[in-house]
Amino acid sequence: MNLRIIGVTGAIGSGKSIVSKILNDLGAVIVDADILSRTVTAKGSDALGELVSYFGEEILMQNGELDRQKLADIVFNDKVKLHALNAITHKHIVKRIQSAIDNIKAAGKCEVIALDAPIPIEHGFIDIVDEVWVVTADGEKRKNRIMERSGYTLEEAESRLDSQMTDEEYLRLADEILENNGEIEELEKSVVRLFFQKVLKQKSH
Image 1 (cartoon, rainbow, N blue to C red):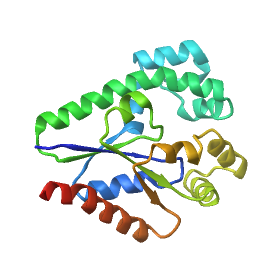
Image 2 (image 1 turned 45 degrees about the vertical axis):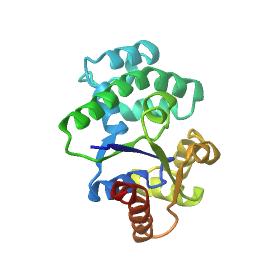
Image 3 (image 1 turned 60 degrees about the vertical axis):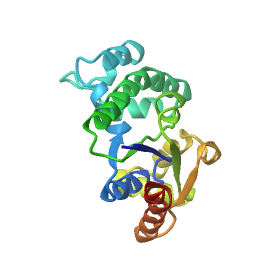
C-alpha cells in the first residue's frame, strides 16, 4: 500500500485543526502533535522533569501535573524561554510522532496520514511528510477566533500571535496553501478539492 503523509500546519487561529478534521472525514488518519505533546509532559515523564529543571516547580499544579496555562503565560512573552520549551519537548514529541506513524503503517489499513503540527520543525515534520499544507487566515480574523475560542483579552491574543512564526515563514514551507478567511463550507470545499487532486487522482494512476 502506498501511504501518503500530508503535513498540516498553520499559526494559531488559522483553522489548521478544522482542516485536519475534514481530512479525517475523508478517510485520513490524524496524528496530532498537540495531543502527543500532552502525553510526553505527563506527570513523572522525562520531559516534565526537564521542564521543571529549567522553569522551576512553579509550572506544576499541586497534584504534580504540568500547569499548561502557567507555562504558556511564561513562554508566550519570552522568545528565549519559548525556544527552551520547544527544544525540551520537541525531541520527545518527535519520538511519539514516529512511533504513531510506524504503528499506522504496520496496521496497513490506511492510505493517508495527516500530521497536524503547529510548528513545522525540520526533524519530525518536514523530513517525515510527503507535502506540506499551510492553512492561513488574516491576522484580525485569527485574533478574533482565539479571543472567542480561548477567552483571551485583546492583549493576550496579540501576545500569542506575536510569539508565532510569521506568515512568510509558514508560506515558504508550503506545497499547498489553504486560505481560511470565509465560511467553513468554503474551506471544506478547498480541502476536498485538494484531497481529490493530490491523493485520489494519484491513487487512480
